[in-house]
Amino acid sequence: MNMILFMIALSLTLSTILTALNFWLAQMNPDSEKLSPYECGFDPLGSARLPFSIRFFLVAILFLLFDLEIALLLPLPWATQLEDPTTTLIWTSTLLLILTLGLVYEWTQGGLEWAE
Image 1 (cartoon, helix red, strand yellow):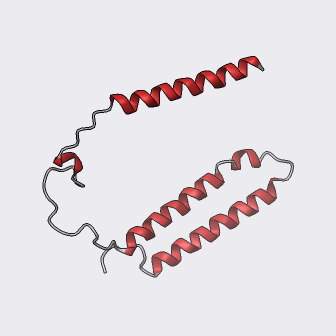
Image 2 (cartoon, one colour):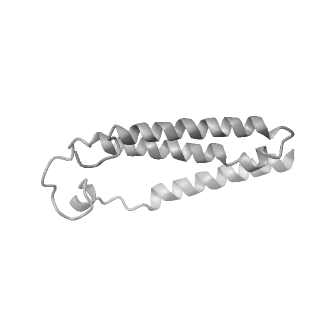
């Protein structure tokens, strides 16, 4: 118990010291270049509030969906070693079928085309 309290006290002390050093040693002399919203060195020519195309969001959502699919399918090799792997294979096939049908639907509707 004493060792745990010692480790907690040590970590709190060390983090407090490092945070205080960071605040005291940081250079606080901002100039106009550091305060500008762009780091490229020239003044902005237009508005930064231009609307994005909805296709960027669609591609991002599709990426997340298929990334989640990979995460769900990762434990599949261990699940097939169960006593009854048929249920696992049926659920996996159903998931892949639903995602494939969704991708085909998106493709036929023209959602994956960049040019109008």
